[in-house]
Amino acid sequence: MIGFIALAGALEVVYRHAGLGATTSWAGKYSASALAIRIVGILVLAPLGEALFAGSHIQYSWIGMALVFIDGLYFGLARAWSGSTLLTIALHCAGNGIAVYQRLH
Image (tube, rainbow, N blue to C red; front, side, top):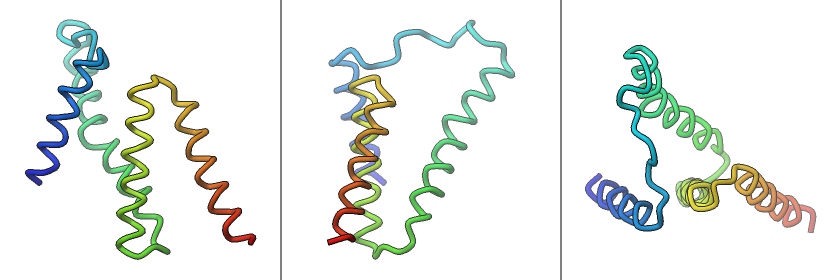
């Protein structure tokens, strides 16, 4: 857990240094209920959905699951740095395409 917190802190420094940090404050921009929904969605629902998706790869060993997790980090960083969801979709498609190719040969 300490390693994850250290990584998250280091990434925050990198994001801000690269100009990728939050650019606008939510303070005063949303009502209390809209702000609560955003916070719950970001802090609880998104990670839960991602954990459930990663957990659906049950055909893999624990090492395979770790690699799926690393892929997720890679895709997330690619999205953060590029600002493009289409890029992450293309990267995921390419990875899946390689997996399909490997299974056909």
